[in-house]
Length: 528
Image (cartoon, rainbow, N blue to C red; front, side, top):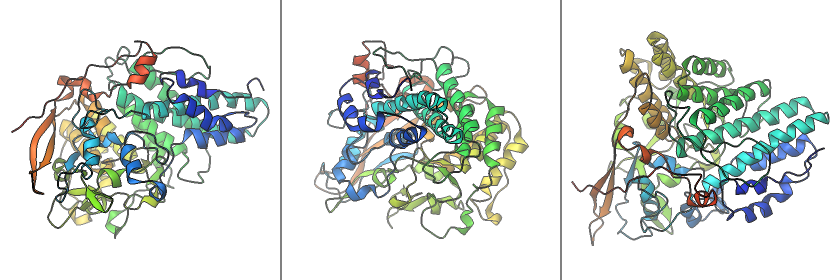
């Protein structure tokens, strides 16, 4: 074999800075070295490709680990971008009424204050102490690992290793690389705009297995999304006929759904429909009829709707109130705007949410109610998305009747038959209806923030809105909660930089100016 050792740890120099490289090399060198067969690459795929899931994670995770790790990678808990849930219009602050204002009880809220308020530097807490964005480096390490796995597969194939296993491992590696690029692009790059994608700067693009010390800059949106499409198209071929032995390993159906999503973002509507249809052709997965829901998790790992999942579910922390050291702590909750978007007879209100108390003080998202049911709130792929991708693409193509039929397949499982009202909208109103349906069905699954960005630059029916996040406080000397003021995020066209997270300082410094960030404005609280 031409290359027996994968030195992908050296790739830490690519965009990451060297602060974490030593630990990475030390921790993973045994796993990454001396690849002899596709079995070795399969093990690397499990250890270095998939994001750790959180089955029983709280058994060995302290409260401090959970909170200090909300945007970091810690020893006991590896959180995948939980702040996705804190920037959009589905979230509000929640102060527990018996908080007394102590910093301990307000820690989750204070830790995430700057990202929730879209501040110039979102990775500071309320006391202006840096929260290092380790997710950036953690994702790039996984991309580097997948680059090397894909390259090494070419070598092990030459040795005559089992072709079917080689195809499966490469298909999974390509899927994971595309999924990670998708999230990086939609967090740290501009939204994909069809008219300007060839010139808009997105994120760096690295697919080579070569190990070298170099500096990198942002690639265009067209190049980054083109790579996603290439990887996912290849994955759908390589994973054909592969048996999925666990929902924690991806498969062809998941690849078709993610590819459908990417095409929808790129406004390749016919392709989005075709990929969704390919996913829906697999009858192993189906919609769960919520008319039969009697309690427990609406989304669970062995649900017929769940195609694939990895990473954690953070909603138990983000939507607390978190129970810490014998006391309840303040956190976040569902916005009134989100809850009002549901028809009162929508079965998802009961299945997806739990009222916080008899006082009527808001709703927690509890799609996955038990930690050990192990479904991510960001990286899971469910079959309802295929229906929603298809319906929106049809509506944007002007295929109103077809779009209504598609979205009604989903809605028929979310309402009692007698409560399922007819859809009378057409044209732009129908597009908006389907987008609202997407919001309701996929809330707190890592979609809403990205969808708001892409709606703003859509060439057929653009949509943008102002988002308001109220900041709450306690009345001095009492437990009474009141609104201290409001932070406002203007529509994308007026506040573009705030919709793009800054690449971490350590990556900027390492690349000596070749990587730059949009200048995000400071944001003052409006007292009304």
